[in-house]
Image 1 (tube, rainbow, N blue to C red):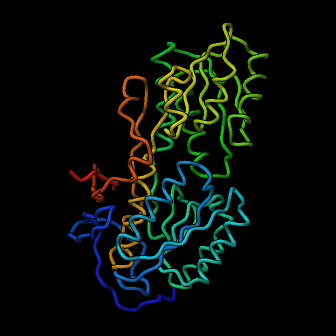
Image 2: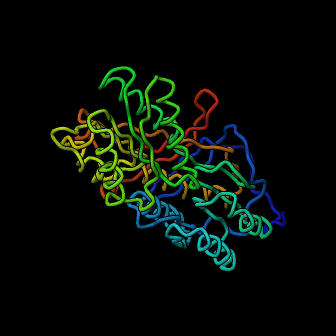
Image 3: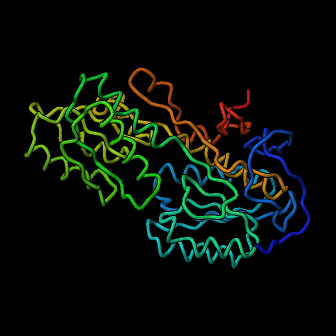
Length: 350
C-alpha cells in the first residue's frame, strides 16, 4: 500500500502500558506478529482516529465508543465516530467519509466483513492502518481485537448441562449470521450443545434484535413444545429478557443471555435469567484506543488480540460494575502472551 509516512518509528510487538484517564502511554519490548509495517502520517501528539461504528444505540457498542474516545483524547488525539445503525451500505459510505477526512487510523466492527472489503482496500491504499473487531475475513488489517464470543456461547451449553442435567432439550434465539460476532455466538452454542448430546428443538433469528422481537418467537415455541423446552440460549440479553417474559407456571425454561448489560444483570439477579456474559466493553474500547495510538507511534500489533469474557450468575452478579462507573476509572493496558495467544489485559490502576 502507499503509506502516508515513510519513516518507521519502531517495530516489535507489545508488552506496553497506558492509562485511560488523562495519562500517557509507555513503550517496551516484546514479541508478536504485525500486519502494519509503518506508522501513519501523524505524530504521537497529533493524530485522528476514525471509528466506523456498527450499531451505536446498543449499550455495549456505545460503551466501547466512549472508552475509545477517552483513551484517544487522553493521548492528545481526535476521535471521529460514525454510526451505521445496522445498515451495511451506510457503513461502507461511513468508511469512505472517514478516509476523506484524512484520519490516521481506522477502527471498525464490520457488519459485513466481505462486503466492506472495497472500502478497507481504499483505506489501505491511502496508507491508513485498520483495526477490526471480531473479524478474521478480508483485510489487510493491522490487528483484529476479539472477545471470546464463540467460546462463551459454547460454555453456555455446559452451564445448561450442569443445571438441568445431561441430554437437555433446548432452543436457540440467533443473531443475524452476516454479523461475524453474532455468527460466532450462534455457532459456538450449537457446537457446545451438539458436543454434550443436547437436542436443539428450535432455533430462529431475532431480526428485530430486541426483547419485543424475541417474545413472539418464544411464544410460538411455547405453543409447539411447551415444557419440553428445558433451556433457551439467546445471543444477547434483550432477546433473553424477551424469552424470559414468556415464562409461566407450565413453561419455565432456564434462560441464558449474552452481553452483560445492565438489564441482563438485573434479570440474573432477580432470577429471570440464569446467566449472562460480560464482554467488558469499556476495557475493549480502552484497548482499541490504545492500540490505535500505538500504530501512530509506529509500533506493531499482534495479528489477533483476545479479550476474555466473564460469566455472570447470581453467585457473582453483585460484583458486576456498571459501565458508567467503569468509564470513571483509570486503566493500564497491555498485551501479554498467554500460551501462544495475545491476550488484552486492561487493569484498573490502584
